[in-house]
Length: 167
Image (cartoon, rainbow, N blue to C red):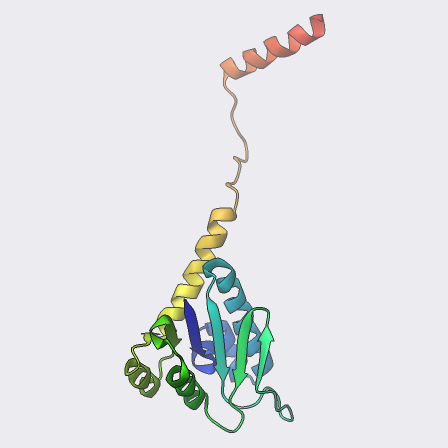
């Protein structure tokens, strides 16, 4: 599965990242999204491309970079919408790509190329659920705080230890 993600559109679907955006912590919000997507990618083994509007920083003309195994693109002089449409238009097999956005214009455009789509809201829920389920399976069960031992178990262990003393 190949995922093509409208970065800022998705950031606002995670309450903690949205909070960072609202107080001007753009870099932290972007890094938080990429960290979450890296966790998701470890589980689902998807190829992920994330497109962000604008520049990486005020004076940084970085057009693309690789963060772990995620390809990150910055639109610089264009909109992220434009880049997403260009990726789909130039994709030799757009049917194998899922575009993640809630932007109706992008959804309408990529449907013409038979690309799959998922709204950012649904995808954010899917990411959270996937990560939660993965870690739920790995958490060991808690042991009883005060386990009870039956009389039968006590006598069994007494016999075992008393045999060792005799030898």
